[in-house]
Amino acid sequence: MRLTRPAALLATLATLATAAAGLTIAAAPASARAARGGGNVLENSGIIGETPAPQVIYLNRHATKASTVSRMLAADAKELHRLGFNIRYAGYGTPKAAEGRIRVTSGGAGCVGDGGQSGAVTYPRWQYLPGGKAYMYDARVIMCPAFFTRYPSWELAALLKHELGHALGLDHENSKYDGKYQMMRWTVTPGITDYQAGDLNGLRWLARNASLVKSLVAPVGRFERASWSRQGNQWDLHVTGWAVLANYPTAQVKITVTRDGQVLATAPTRVLRRDVNKARKVTGDHGFSLTPGVLAKGTHSYCVTATSPVNKAAKANFGCTKITV
Image (tube, rainbow, N blue to C red; front, side):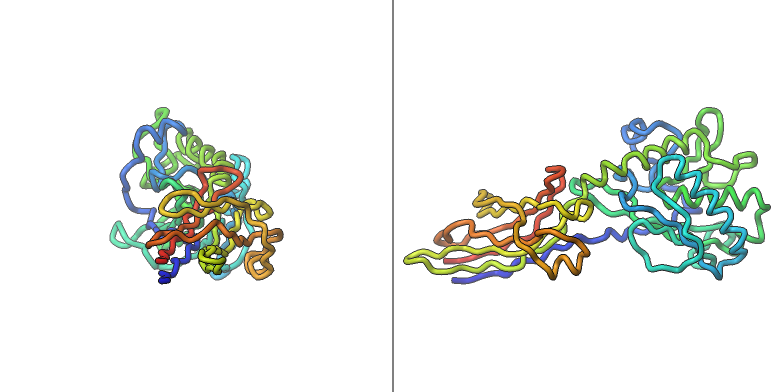
């Protein structure tokens, strides 16, 4: 009997970081724009909403003019909360990157364009969902030296709102909408000191779809082992591993075992895995141990998939193993 070990599958962060400020990026398809209203462009045309995790803004205490920027961020967070975002300003802090965190600092890294005089640059990150869609994950905002030397106070406030727009998923919209340029235009526009109608269309759409994103996030976990035991002249297959649905941590994930694409068995996660609960900081039964049937003669591929009980579209392939009898 020969076994090819399964490849472990863990959910991975799509680390596509884009320097948003100072760049002109192609607009999203018209069909995507129509669904959320006009006057805005997404960072990635596949983005369908915000992270379902609480969003928290942090400011580096050592950033230039930190007290001034802190007051601006506090006001901006309140405005965004009124627009439907589950967001708050936490004050000074330099935490590591994590889902929902928007980290603001000052420095020269990435400050290119206009002869090195960009006011700020934002690096948003998104994570992919089943089917190729994506949602906003976290962001880093860097206020460049020109932010503090080139712009008057009203432009500082506008520029910070602009960068937060990038952090939340909006790209540059350089055309007029409803007769006006938008806050997300590539450059600060005199008289535009707050989000405009097109900006608001995009921001509200992103915030509203956080609940959709929550249901579409696939389970994470691992197909750990395939083994077998002899029963007379036959060999019974045993499959073990674990699966967790991050946004619904007490839910039991549906596990499916297939042979060459044909379903052998399905069952919810029913095994208590204290190690998984401790590592993932969850409770409940998240392990699986299935005996889907007898090993078939010849070489066959046995695969494990995990499906969310909340949304059948949220599915993850935990890998396959080839067994020869």
